[in-house]
Length: 251
Image 1 (spheres, helix red, strand yellow):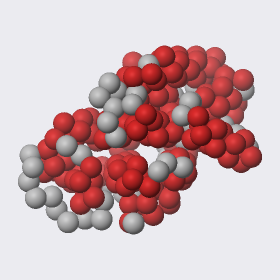
Image 2 (image 1 turned 90 degrees about the vertical axis):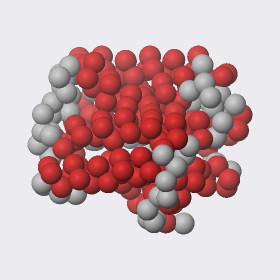
Image 3 (image 1 turned 90 degrees about the horizontal axis):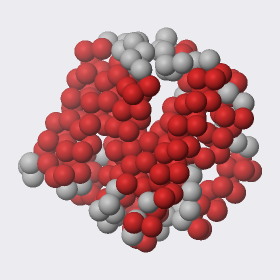
């Protein structure tokens, strides 16, 4: 499956989480996560802002076709994506693409609220739509967990963003990093408090948030891990964590 291969290469942590899910669930999640890989890398594959905008617009057009029930263009990701999204989900994902326009510009986020909104529109929206595709009509746990997991991934990406002349953090001082990571843990607590509302069949989607807690806690314990690019726990801990989350459905 082309979508699975794309996710394996471009988002190995989500790939591992998805492979821990039942096969029918994978068929739903892989097109969504492949879409996310394509959109998230669009601003980075060219130095020309206009070309990056065009790449993002291409995906907005795909979502419009899905939302309007038109024939969707043939594409290794767009075609299977059209089979797992309804009109409302397609419209929701447009916010994810709009947020990714920030990645094109070297400008910093205006403030904490702007960064939070970016994380909510990217990580939060993606996980909420993924859980909804599996029957979660509540969405609160998935949105909050996606926001927390998005922050964890974002903090891990800080060295790469800085190498690309971006300014990823509103406050890059150690105390600023700790405050941001603590905010992420409050989102994780929100997700845990509303987990009961997620139907059992949709819970495998939440496995994608498996590394949020450990990464955010490492940032709090030693904010220097962010600049050093060492937030990811050891592979032994990573494997054990994934096995535990997949088996228990807890995060």
